[in-house]
Length: 172
Image (cartoon, rainbow, N blue to C red):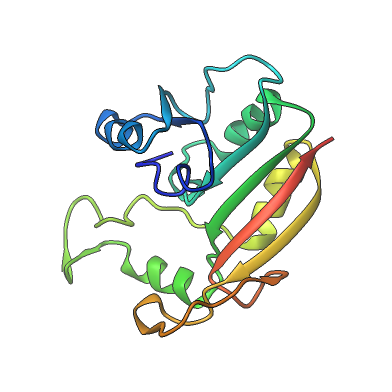
């Protein structure tokens, strides 16, 4: 959930995050905050009809476990929506190159993206299908560098050209 930047405008009422400072910001945005991690969701089986993950996949320690947990807490026929930076896109390649750099200087922590493990669209599809999701539908946007954008780039169906990809899957 992070700060609730995406959750609040999308009407997401419950969010999960391990960080108390992030949760405090989300709470101010009207999102009910639960402390926890995706690999061990503190919710009952079938509790939700929809689960949203926005740019969190690259931070997960055990991705397969996190997506299995997502499948567990979704009701039959429920949907997962995952938004991520495609590793094979121009922005994904740039972020991969920025690993290990902090303001152009090497440091012990590897900069902001030091621990990041970005996925390709194909890898994301494989993880979701492996966790029991089907009927995957992809859309993408961000076809230029974010700092170079001069207009809103509408999403298009598919994946493989844009840097910001969204995939919806249905719990089978």
